[in-house]
Every structure is written in C-alpha cells, then in structure tokens.
Amino acid sequence: MNGPGIDYIPLTALAAKKTTTAELRALACERMRRLGYPFVATEFTPAGGACRFDVIGLGRYTRQVRIYEVKSSRADFLADKKWQSYLPFATHFAFVAPAGAIHRWELDGAVGLIEYGHPSFERMIANRRFGFRIRPEDALRASRPARRLRDAVAGDEWTALLETIAFGRPLPDDEPTFTDGAGI
Image (tube, rainbow, N blue to C red; front, side, top):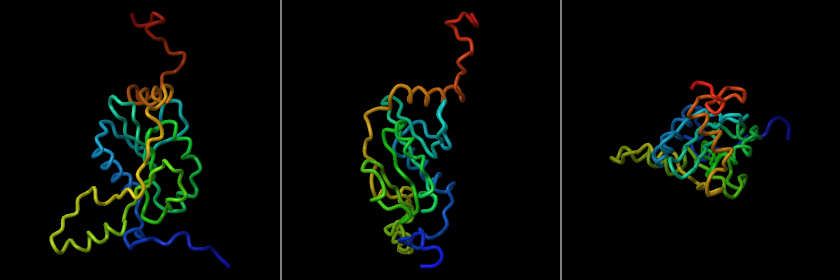
C-alpha cells in the first residue's frame, strides 16, 4: 500500500468532527465536578514533577485522585508515551477522547475510557425534535469505567499535589522555615 493509511474510522459523524482539546477538557471538568470532587483543575503540574495532567480531581478526605488525560485524536493518543508516569499520582485514571479514537483493548485493564460523540449521544441529538432534552452529562459516555488503581495515593505523590495547591509552587530546599528560627 502506498501513502499513509487510514488513522481511524470514527464511529459517528459527531466523533469525526474535529473536537478541540479545550472543548474536551471543559466537558471532562464538568464531569469531574458532577462526580463530587471538591478540587478540580486543568493543566496541573505537581510540585517537583515533570508531568502535567490535563484534568485532575482531588477528594477532600479520602486521598483519592482522579486524572483524565484528554486526547483530541488517535494520532494524539499514539504519540503520547508519558501517560504511564501519571499513574502513581492517581487512584483512578481515564482517557477522554472522541468515539473511536482509542480502542478499549489498547489500554491496561484498570485504565478507563470516556468517549465523546458516542452513537447513543447522536441518537439523542436526532431525537431533540421530539422534545427529548440533552443534559451535559450525556455528551461524555464512559465506554470503559476506570477501575481503582490503589486505595490512596502514596505519601510523596500526595505531598507534591498538596504543595502545588497550597503554595502554587514547590518550596525550595534552602528556603528558611520556622524550625530554622526564621520569621519568629
């Protein structure tokens, strides 16, 4: 076969529409808030980390951390080799992508897949004329729910996440602290 092959065949016309990463990220944030996570952030980099999470939700008392990695196309998914380094920071991890961009069999058993533009959503759009209402939660469908990777995030990763939230930046090692007598 000469030339490039087909990247992927979308399941629906809506999935074939070029969806921007920002649109998918906004839908993922809404979904995270509906799941009850009190802290939801986008483009989040933990203190001292070399990774950046597209969408992250932290549980208040449970040390549960849900991370969504947003992929706007199949090529975007295939080019990403760093997502496995995110797993130590998460109790639940899932990809958010257009329907058909990622195949379920390509993912580890505990990694979830949330699809935008699934055929059932397209049927809802077609039936709007009959008075059916479409809720925001209908736009994203978990075709494969994320399973629990661990009960709670380990101490070092949890501390890095909290430092970033609390201070907006990690504390340098040489910065004076109250135990050193500074600021008293």
